[in-house]
Image 1 (cartoon, rainbow, N blue to C red):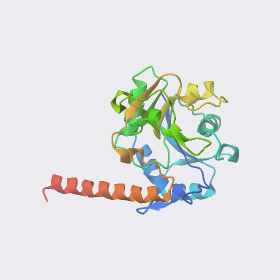
Image 2: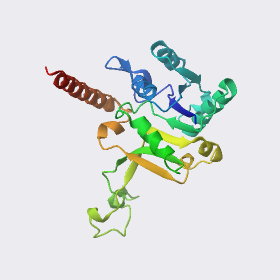
Image 3: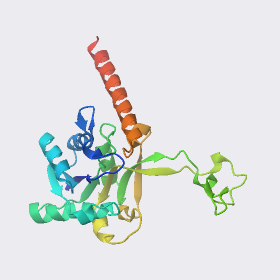
Image 4: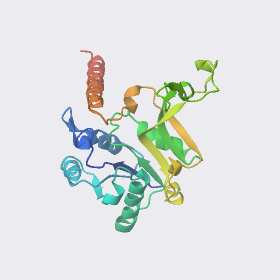
Length: 249
C-alpha cells in the first residue's frame, strides 16, 4: 500500500504576509509540518504543493523533500483544496509512476501536532472500513443558542425552538481540523467537480480527537502567531525539564 503525504502551501497570504515561510523561533512555519511529516513511519512519500517560487526556494534550501509546482488556477482563495491534492496525485502518477492508495493532507499553518499523531490517524483509517479519518476538536459553542442580527438591528435566536433546553442536553459537537486528514484516494476522484463542503471525505468519516487546544491552532492572524510562539516556548520548557529529569540533573 502506498501512502502519500501532501502539504499544501499557497503563497500570497493576506492577513499574515508570507505566513507559510514566516520565521517562528528560527524556523519557517511550514517547517514544523514538514518535520512532522518526514518523521512518519507509514507514509512512503511526502511532497509540498505550492504555487509560490519563494516558498519553493525556502523549502528546498532547508529540507530534502520534493516540491510540486501547483498551477495558479488551483491556488486562488476560492480554489477547493481537493483540486490541489488531485493535481499533485496526477503529477506523481504521470512523472514518477507513483499512485497512492491513501492521501494524507497536512495543513502548513497548523504547525503543532502531538508526536505520532500522523501515524495514529493513518493507522485508524487503515484498520477500518471508513472513507477517511480526520483530526477534530470538541466545540465549546452551542450553535442552537446563538443569535443573529436581523434587519432591524436586533439580536434574535438563530433557532426559535430551543427555549428551555439546558446546555447539557445538546449533543456534543466536534469541529474538523485540517491538521491531519487521511483519505482514500478513490474518494477524491469519485467526488471530483462536486462543490459540496468536505464531500471528498466520503460518507464514513472517523475522528481522532485533539484534546489540547495547541494541536488545533491555525495561524491566520497576527495574534495567532503570538499564541504559537507561546505554545512553542511551553513545549521547549517541558521538553527541557523532562530531559533534565531523565538525566538526573
